[in-house]
Each structure stands twice: as C-alpha cells, then as structure tokens.
Length: 389
Ligand SMILES: Cc1cc2nc3c(=O)[nH]c(=O)nc-3n(C[C@H](O)[C@H](O)[C@H](O)COP(=O)(O)O)c2cc1C
Image (cartoon, rainbow, N blue to C red; front, side, top):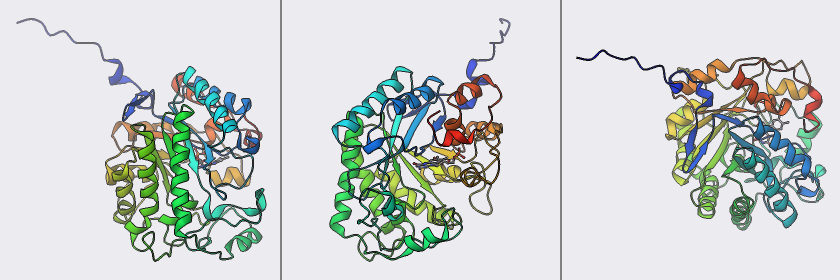
C-alpha cells in the first residue's frame, strides 16, 4: 500500500466565487460581475462617440465580466425621449457601437446592449417630438406611489392617453427584433432587454398599467404575451447568442409596487419568458440580498433562478452603503461599503449566479480590479453622475 499523497488545494477550491467563469449558451464570461445598465446621455443624436467608447473600454480593461450598456433605443418613434440617449439603428450609431464592441473585446470583455422602449415613462417634453405621447398598453401611466418624480411631473404624466393599437404592438416587436439583429452586426455578444422599472415591456407585465382585453391583457400569462413575443422574435434573429432579461418588482412610478405578490405569481410571468428563450434573468432590486417574499430568505434573484431554472443576476447596493434613491436625490452621501461577502456566499451556494453592479462601477472604472485585489474602494464622487469617469 502506498502512502496517500495530499494534493495541494486546487485554485478553484479556494478561489473567489465572484471570479469564476460562467457560460451562457456558447458564451463564456470571465467572472460573475456584470456592469448594470446606466443611462448616461452622452450620445448626441443617438450616436455613441469616442468618449462612450473609452468609458466602456476602461471598465473592460479593469476586468468587468459582462458589460450591459445603458438603455439603447429601438427604432420606433416613441422609444426614447432624450436625443442624447443612444440608439441601435442607423449607420452612424452602429459604427459607433462597433467601436465600442471592438474596444471591449480587445480588453477581453463581453458586452450586451440594453434594448429599450420607454413606453409610459417617455417624457414628451424631453424629446425632439413633444407632440407624440408615450406608448401605453391601456393609456395608463401607472398607479403613483413612492417615487422620485415631482408632483407636477406626475400629474402631467398621469393624464390618460389612447391605448396603443395592435398594429403598433406588432411594429414594436419587429423593432426589438431588428435592433437585436443590428446589435449582432455591431459585434455585441448577446442582447439585454429592459423589462423592468415601469417602461414599455414592464407596463404590459404590470397589472396597474395593462388593462387590455385582447390577447396582450388579462391574466398573468396574457400580460406576459408581449414580452414573450419580443423574446421569441429576438431569438429568431440572434441564433445562439444569449438573451438577458431585466425585470423588477419596483416601478419608477412606485418603488413600492410589486409585479408578483407571491412566488407563484412571479413565476407565472417569468417561466414563459424562460421558455421563449431568456438565458439570464437580471433581477433589478434596491438591496441585492433582501428577502423577496415573506417566509423565505431567498432574494429576488434567488427566486428568479429557483422559479425558472435559469441563471440570475442580483442587483442593488453592491459595494455601497446607500440606496439608489438616496444617490439620485442627493439626500445623503453615498458611501462605499464592502458588502460583497454576501454575494460571494450566495453565488457559492447557487442562490444566484452573478452580481450586478451599477453606481460603484459608474463611479470607479477600476472597481472590479479593486475587488479582485481586495483593495479598499474609493469615495463616491457625485460629479461622476454627470460625466463619463
Ligand atoms: C445614473 C443611472 C442610470 C441608470 N439607467 C438605467 C438604465 O438605463 N436601465 C436600467 O435598467 N437601469 C438603469 N439604472 C439602474 C441600474 O442599472 C441599477 O439597477 C441600480 O443603479 C441599482 O444598482 P446599484 O445599487 O449597484 O447602483 C440606472 C442607475 C443609475 C445610477
């Protein structure tokens, strides 16, 4: 009998769960950190320029596993309001995005665009077409609750409009599909869909904004039909590239809103999306590890994974001690905070798969490198909300 030789601990046995690769379909991401989508208003006439290229390049160079771009308008008249929001159509914008994807790939990164239609939340006054009202499933803006919008704005936006007609619904689904095709041509590695926060896709999911009586409204599965048709149409255009889908309980109209009161209700919305081709659920929340439903410690991302069997991303306050509302309203200083162990533990026990990080990466391009090297975080500088640091 030979002596037992103890192997040295393998790299993976002791390695940081945040820095393990993950594969979605054929795409392997180098780690579990995803830069969350953040609108920056730096693309005049919808065209991302060299400042946007270097903004994303810096994040890729510092090791972000997956960059999800700011919301990017699809080719529909009322998709996005501000002319400095980038879009995913037209030669100039697609050439700009090609420079972004080339720069990210050269740095070993991967990048998805977040395809966006603002729906009820499009502000006509902000747009170059103030005569056009936002597209709304039933003409409703949504039940206003706790929100960072001012009263006068909410009153103006709450005025009912005409519900969108089915022909327009078909046009919008087609516009999502062609934006996805354009994204592939511009070199993106997959596509993210903005299905949260009360924007168009979410306004079909949310019972407060969707009172339709056609096949896009009614019970939960019918409210999911619009999103399902978009996912299927995108899937038909992008082959085996991954689709990420952002959803949220909260809405810009009401941070206290809930898409699903129970896990069953949430599952009834998410499961058809998984079946239609979603590969990764981006569970947008305010506190990434907060229990999502009574009676369980599971986070929203944990539930998304449990209910659908698909990988998920947890978001909200990673690397920071304050919520997004406080940062945007300037009510208090945004403090860096190393709260990452909870994310490491949840990934290690398979509760969710990735950590979505917004403000911390907006503030500090080197943030992922600091996490990897276990270096302290830098102070949050509010000026970075108004520039491309
Ligand atoms: C300046 C800014 C712009 C944002 N724009 C978007 C957006 O375009 N699409 C989106 O889904 N979420 C957007 N968000 C929300 C973030 O993606 C993220 O969910 C949120 O900031 C919470 O993550 P954090 O606590 O890590 O910042 C934005 C957040 C900030 C701070």
